[in-house]
Length: 114
Length: 114
Image 1 (cartoon, chains in turn green, blue):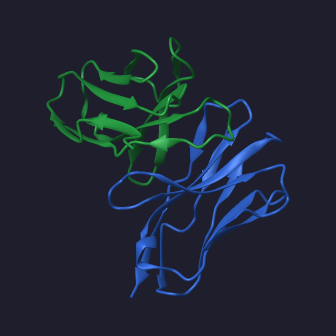
Image 2: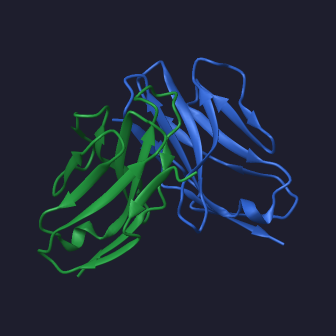
């Protein structure tokens, strides 16, 4: 069972470069999420998509854009990367936005911006 | 503001012993769900246990149990008969009834000593 798949696993960018982090889930989940994880700060929500065709800002959306391409895929784009965006990025999905539902996480993307 | 506090950045336990990880949270909501997630060195977050705030009975999952004190806004995780595979970063999190928003603590790194 693949679950939540993120690509790439590692990426190094120069300041100002752009890139898209890809996320796909095969569990037929409606809701998908992007988090960033920084040392000493836990996970913080960047954007989420409650259902196909909708996206909403989370706690730290500045500098990011997202696209819910279809039910399976939710991508995160950095238009002009900054060193402050060096982090580990996690994609997650859940059946829907009901707070009782478990979130399933991908293995993460470690991004370094030089 | 919704906050989750894990006051123990690092903990260690002898193999086969019991360890308790602390978590407190702050919310004005009456309905919410609490979670403990485990993040092993592979980075992929895995759900350990879940507690519904309206249930007084503490959740248990095999060797994992919680001590949920709603009035004190405390949600600690007890790991019994610790195993080497329990070594990981543990995150406390909660989700409020409006859904689509998870709030994570900063994590506790657990070392299991053989």
